Image (cartoon, rainbow, N blue to C red; front, side, top):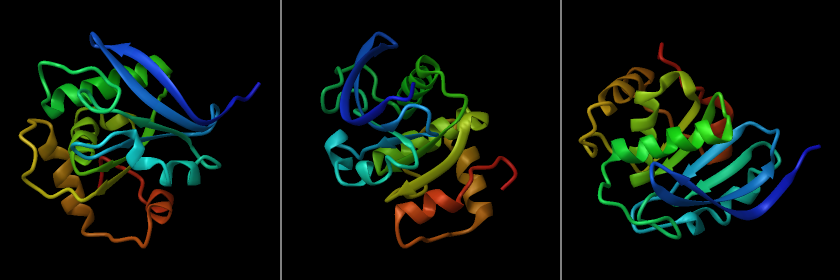
Length: 168
């Protein structure tokens, strides 16, 4: 039986940290992970997330040290990408799409570079080159540069047409 979520809070312990995420949509829909900017939390997605629930299983994650997620000793994007990988493993997603804003975008491209086969779509908002010290980030940035600058009127359009690909 299919379950529908409408802004339901969940807590999960990953990598020794209790993380919080909020979920919308059907549990059998393709997963879409939303990653907020610095000094933000899942509330940053309260308008956008419900608008995507008919097409995706939407999860907005409080990154470590933000919102209702636990504080940590390490806030490097590599560690946050490992949190995403653990979340993806725990929820059994073979692939997912990610929308990352600012800090969330840095974490998203770090994850995409470290786990390219697990990405479906990647949308980065308000993220510039050179903002990550991650050793993994350069690979995904190169693929983004090769694809060229692409602009969309809204995130709905971006998610509909921008598959993440290692060959781009």
